[in-house]
Length: 149
Image (tube, rainbow, N blue to C red; front, side, top):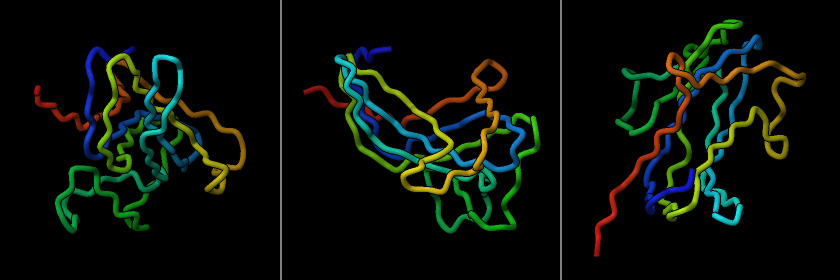
């Protein structure tokens, strides 16, 4: 859907996915994109998370952040339970970007980035990403208001 006004996004966009899979561990790569009226796609930012490191820590933070804190420690890791819907939240790299009026915003999700990372798992898997009233997947953009001059 094209934007009706300019939209300034400044900070860490947050991605929340409701997923299920039979595979115990996956990796997610998320790419935020700006789609111009003519269809040209502009890369804005990206983020990634290995799903076993999805646990968000509230009490062990070294400092306060505006994004989820993942320790990436073995003791905080957990495999997915086969077929169970699981919430996963992670941030994208911080940005300050102006999406122009009539452009569209797109979030692309992948489970591999073969040019930069080993493909895990190495075989085909079934992955479900839910987006409904009970299990909402979404992106939260840190939107800034722009003063009128």
